[in-house]
Length: 203
Ligand SMILES: N[C@@H](CCC(=O)N[C@@H](CS)C(=O)NCC(=O)O)C(=O)O
Image (cartoon, rainbow, N blue to C red):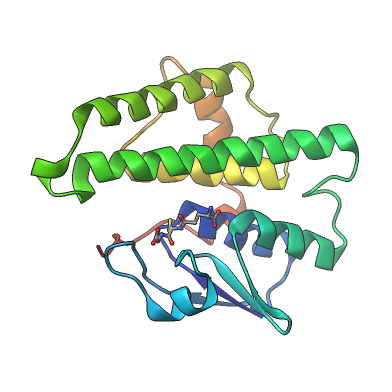
């Protein structure tokens, strides 16, 4: 199997971390740049949305990151990273949904702050998006996972928060001490150290 990935994508990193955590070292990881303003024909031929990550399997191409994570857990019959009990599974998937939503918001905010030509930016939209990030950080400070909770949800969350910090949306450690401590500890995992963000979007 081969994963089409991007070294600065939080969704792709979630899958890369899952690959490490599941011990699936046979999966080859290939970097592919893509953006809505600079689409990559290889990625677009495999995913009509033109986005990475995409996992190439004998049965065809799989996207998006959540579906790939589900596929990898099922193929390894791993129930720890994606628990089978209803309550634990919903909790993991809810964290994953929040994490992916944070990344969607961060990407949208970056369009309004750096990626779109300056005369086309909409400050009111930027402010609305930044407010969602603030509210999510406050929610997560009150609902910080435990350091022993290693699921697709907490992996997604660590990748999302570390990506937001990588792009300058850093968590205020004075106001969010529990969340900051949790993230600092999580990014020390070997799987996170092996997948540190690097690079710039090529629009
Ligand atoms: N929901 C998707 C989001 C993937 C996504 O937005 N990937 C970005 C990289 S961070 C991308 O490929 N963007 C290219 C584009 O939007 O054309 C997932 O979870 O895989």
